[in-house]
Image 1: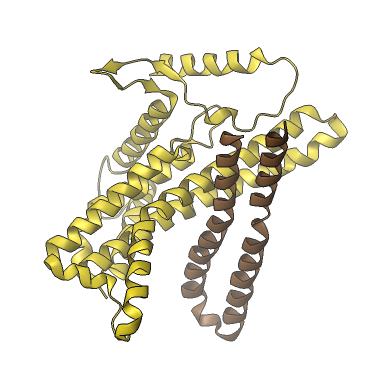
Image 2: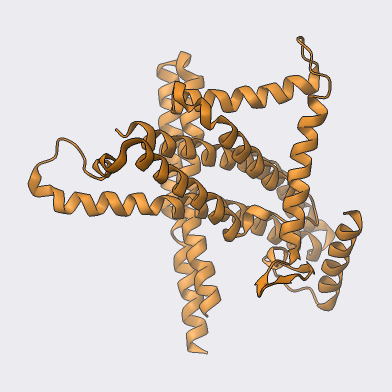
Length: 75
Length: 263
């Protein structure tokens, strides 16, 4: 029983990694808006890298989800 | 094929009916169910729902392009414009990332993009199976890209390709530290490539399943809220499916470019 509760706590801790991804997404979008405000002509170029960067940052949060799944399989 | 789909749907229905009390099981629709068990020389070659939906996605991709280009004309119609836009899109990625000598890899990259895209998008049909939510599928794609780009690098540059792991302009004293880091980051490429796609697909569909569970179990005055969210998140999922196929493709181009031109 204790091992089950410990694995549940571990899964929750793995999900807490979403915080870092949230900070990253805020930075990515904030800086992009800043860049477009300064140089509106570069919007199409900047937004391409915006989506690539956003997908990378989101993927980091999902690694936490994968770790939670691994713990779920063990527990 | 429709008979097979009906069988798969019936199996899913039986599984759903087995648990009478509502119980949240958001990972239920990722279960691989064998439809036609085939065992050849001790190797499991069964036709599962994952295989079936990958076939359906491939057939859709094939027939969409066949339909769009059934009467190719100089002035394209609506369907042909769409097919040509997809063609142009991949061509731009290849040209921007690899350069002129990337043309020879265009068929590979085009096929990879549309395979992943159609697997992602068919997974959004209710009752279907997302082939890219299985890490063995994305891992196979990623290992293919990794092995291909590594062999290409050795083929083009010979043993000189090992210089890839030695960053230029670095003091000699730092080399024992930097070379293992470079090698590890190179070996992590297929892992991050496959896990990114797999985790994005799994997470999105799990979230949708949780929201649908809330919609089904809440009383009517509360159910509209998660139901509205499912509508929004289905849109987001279509977008994520596109973006993840794009990321996979562009990273493939980057890895091929690294192998061709080093840096």
